[in-house]
Image 1: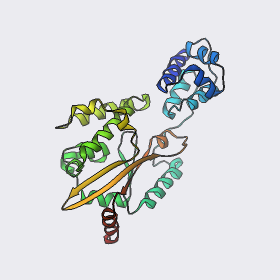
Image 2: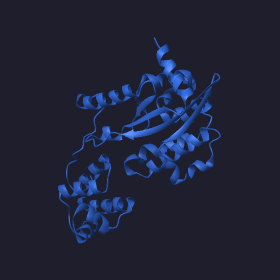
Image 3: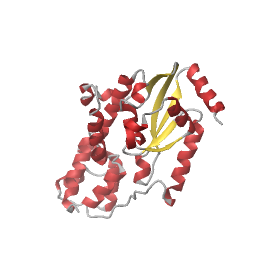
Image 4: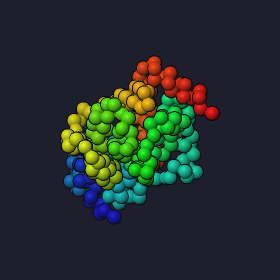
Length: 270
């Protein structure tokens, strides 16, 4: 376990990561600048309450808030529960509600590693229309990133794949800068970049790409052209690490023809 004095450098790291001066952080946390300086330099030790106040002001992910508490000598307060555990029943129901209301349009839920956790029927119908080569992907077929980047995955069908992949890779690089995600995302980036014909420019993405709120996705298969756009959201203010790290990806039709096709597919489903 880290020694209590390790909390100072961690606080400094998060303050700098968020681009805040000591004065700006002090104002947000409603403490003195001197106190922030003393905490970062190890001249003072924060109380448990102060650790949580500063972590909130710095918008530190829950997983890393536990690390700050441990570094300061306190027990972690945020639990990490499996999505199937009883205490996650309300989270599951909320996700099911969102996915149901998204019908007939596709929606899916992924975890911190971008593994599929839940999908709605709209997503299942879309994947039936754009089938993956399951033999080629193997277990990677349960990971949305491998689904997109694998040569025998969705890459074959996405007309604007370079645009979509560039935005997604930029987001992955941004996530890899976060301590809480680095150990999962950095190896994922390496695995994706090992696929054939991956542009080397993906290794140096533009920050503006990662900030795009909506991404257009144009697919073509069996003479059917679908134009959609996708957004990613998270749960509001969860107190569980797993819940905070879940992401909901929703797809919407970008034109009338795509909306009609999605509606028809729903009506045709037994």
